[in-house]
Length: 609
Image (tube, rainbow, N blue to C red; front, side, top):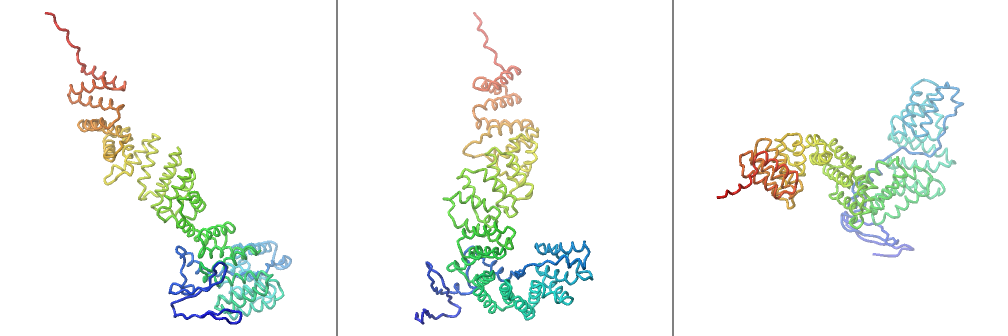
């Protein structure tokens, strides 16, 4: 039912417990009420469903907003100790050490500061109470709250009046008390601090920090009231921006893709207008995080990159790294890259340190390779993939593909040095990798081309083991040739015959086929197996191009002569002389005929009667 109540519109509807939820949304800038039926729409953070692929981001955000509890900043200016006062209690060297510790505290070098103040706090001297206060302040900022509270209490027993002289110390002390579980004690000290400094510019910020303490101790209603009052009453004070952010944080996990835009603008406005570095960092991060949960993935990715560029060593740098990894994967899955190869190349290259999640998506790198091919940028592909191979998150199934692509592209560009380097690095890093064998084969191909035959023999000898099979059949040829050059005829024959078996049945004859038959035959001949050698030569004769047939005919003639098949040997040598095209083999054939007296004698002259 819809009714009017004064200037307001009243909407009344009945709901069944646990079955419906409602939310306000904006449609074309106009507020609207959405009534969603079904358990999936239940109100509250626990009932909100993350967008597909955003689950890890949302869960991480929920934990961060609830559990991230850094030390609070009261925004009170840091006041160093007067050097003239130190002169009355410390010698020159100790003055230098104490001031150095305060300088480290001011600059945020907290470990060095802690060591410096601990030195003075451990000695009984006039400076000890001040050293205890400074040590406690440092430990508070290091989130060592229990140790900080112990040192605050000990310092207060020795010099209670100092708390009135240094309001920042009083704030840290009060928050340490509250964090220990004594909320009333902490509130009492903080309230005293606020009253004593009500006329100071930083007093409104102290109110906000009081609300932060209340929130941590379960006083959410009172904290919200303080944030609202400060945001309304102190428009010209930095406390206003902090309070507005705190109120926005309360709506953060309730935001949905339908209504988050106004909240996102709140964070963006604070980030753009604040002069405080820490507040700017926090709001830039939360703006990016909110978009990462509810907004378009590409927009969120751009904001995450902005945060990293502006705050490379920021408080949230680790968190934003994980978020960026998820967003890169979402951007990749959400676009048709076949029509935008340049965009895919940019996505991969600009985010090459953040591809850990996307790398698990089947076909990612195949798509990237196609994009590089379409764009004609092989050098950029090599640079990207060579860099990715150094990443620890490149999986066992991905590394071989990237390595092969780098090796292939490098070889096509004539850069065998790069190809060799990538393959060697892969084998060095992954000696037991399931794909290390093919890497050895590719490396051996480069070594064979460089005539590094001993390396080929060493790198491919495993191919002759039982149950092993080459990924690239030509690897058998490289190994066979290398063994043949070393006169290891037994293994050379096995390698070449394995090559011949592997390429058998191919539609197109490999250019190395004839040479493989020849080397296998010569190896068998050297081992004394002339029958096998002859069979290989006969097969090779039919498989070889015409310019190589003389070679096979000569070896067949030679084997026939050795076996005493004189007529067959003479016929083969004569065939070379008659049909051959290679003058070298023709010369050898003529020489063999003459030396073996296989030349046919000229016909005898007929006798006259």
